[in-house]
Length: 136
Image 1 (spheres, rainbow, N blue to C red):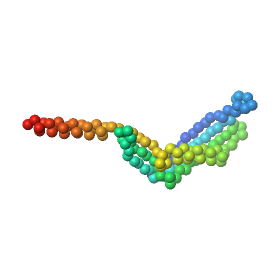
Image 2 (tube, rainbow, N blue to C red; image 1 turned 90 degrees about the vertical axis):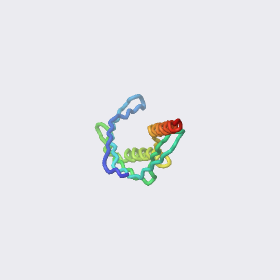
Image 3 (cartoon, rainbow, N blue to C red; image 1 turned 45 degrees about the vertical axis):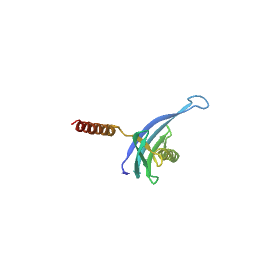
Image 4 (tube, rainbow, N blue to C red; image 1 turned 180 degrees about the vertical axis):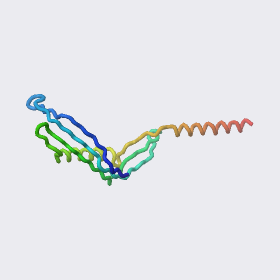
């Protein structure tokens, strides 16, 4: 799977400083996070868990995930695109993705049971036609 576009998420908030007393200062923070590139091999496995059909979706460990982070800290004196903030956010997001989506971890999605209902209906139809043939 190749994704070569840009998805952006912008956040504006304030960091409250509570030392030496509560709310002594507030530091405005503005972040724009974008997924620049995502390239991975997606795996899908069909499983049965407790009689319910599931699809397990994960990526192989050789994925390529690139982020763009724009940061702006401060009100009067502004720090723009701080490298430490970029490194911290990027490493946390990559770690989260690896923990949740890279094989052997993945997402399990329960399949709807409409296939099973169709099979039950087909079996009931065939058994009723067999009973009709036996009655003649």
